[in-house]
Image 1 (cartoon, one colour):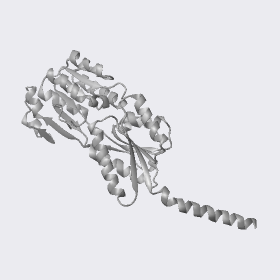
Image 2 (spheres, one colour; image 1 turned 60 degrees about the vertical axis):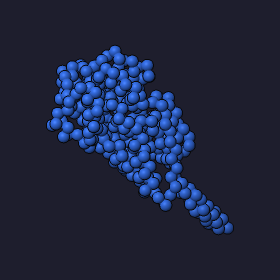
Image 3 (tube, one colour; image 1 turned 180 degrees about the vertical axis):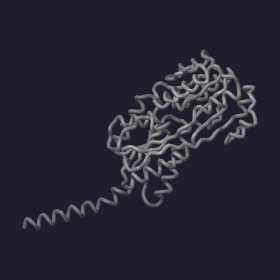
Image 4 (cartoon, one colour; image 1 turned 180 degrees about the horizontal axis):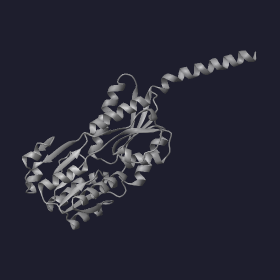
Length: 311
């Protein structure tokens, strides 16, 4: 009798799991942290959703819970905690601060990141994390500036609360000093800090991949255009705010790869078994409309290096 009861209990348990299985797999939930309304991250998210829909079309319903925190430490942490509380199947983050905020919570929920600058230098240590990022040859921006005008001081717009932005600042500072330029740090943590742009007046300005800087890009460009200071950026100038040159990694590639990684994880693969990837291909855009405003002429040999020219 004891053996019979054990057999019946095992059979009932098996039937219970089977009856629930279709409901458990009828829908997956993905939590996404996309800081502010930064167009670069928005383009990644659009590509991510499109690729995910292509992969799961007619097979499984995917619900995406999107968090758009303001670029500060408390907002990033709150966004991470909300998604963990929702018990999502997977978290996707764009940019280093959002990624680090999720890792800091030490959740068991798998994490896929995208939009990280030099991810191998970001100090991400977790078996439950994988993703993709990009590397841009920052020295090229200084080289282009020098071909256009004399640059003795280079202003570097960064944000001290964003780890990747500060790494870009340190890299650009080192390159500028090698070129006998003075690097001027313009640390933006609040809107009031934009006034620093009015007082420092460098010969040219490089804008790091700071979420805060790109949240207020139009305000930054309004100040710099009045002073006729040329700018370089590593995020695409989607609204054409007036950035003279942009050297960036195409965001749709990262969004599509993040979707590919997410699909593998949702189908049972462990993040530790998915190799992280760094994109190194770049696009170079010159804005000739802005060049005319700045009384700058692009030499032909420089224009032919561009992927796109805004006229």
